[in-house]
Length: 270
Image 1 (cartoon, rainbow, N blue to C red):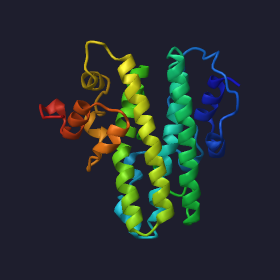
Image 2 (cartoon, rainbow, N blue to C red):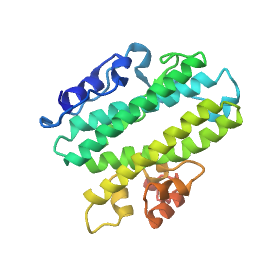
Image 3 (cartoon, rainbow, N blue to C red):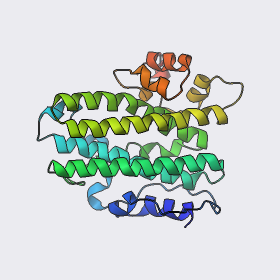
Image 4 (cartoon, rainbow, N blue to C red):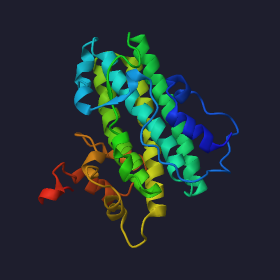
């Protein structure tokens, strides 16, 4: 089977079990086909993306309330499902990307499938079902801006997954304080995998950027508002995770200093 065939099927299928099934063995990428930019994913009705205002989730501090635990894990699973779909989306959108880049996308896609399956399984143990709560399409809303392979890694790897280095660290600690060691270990495993995903984005930023630009300049030039450096970090910044991903010290310093202000109003943005 060709990568293009499985990627298109994953994005468009309304069957969640199919989207999350292990990839076929001996998948080939010799016929990537023309660029294809799918506007929205196939989903069963219960998991169709809704406006963010309709899909509010309690903070991870709510994990101390057993009633809230399935809801919080549901949101984690939705984030991972969007990642599954968007790495498949990128394989369709960027057939001209280097073969090593595309192989990396496929490898990460498989890890995102595994993350989603783990969260769904744990949620079921706690009495929830995937589709019990409304979900947002926050990542999907950014696809019109992801016009190149470089812009894709700057958004997915170096913004969303970069921020998740902080979110998973803080979430695992809070969940452990709530006494749920099994879920905390699951979140920690996701965190370790995210370091590799950020490392992938970092390496391709270096390979694809304008040689005249610094890494920071290239990153900033390839994220479009409302994406911005400040969204690549959490409220608590964990430097060691970025070091483990191979980021240079100056980039880490600038990312840590990033502010959430809107630069269109003349305010600092890091």
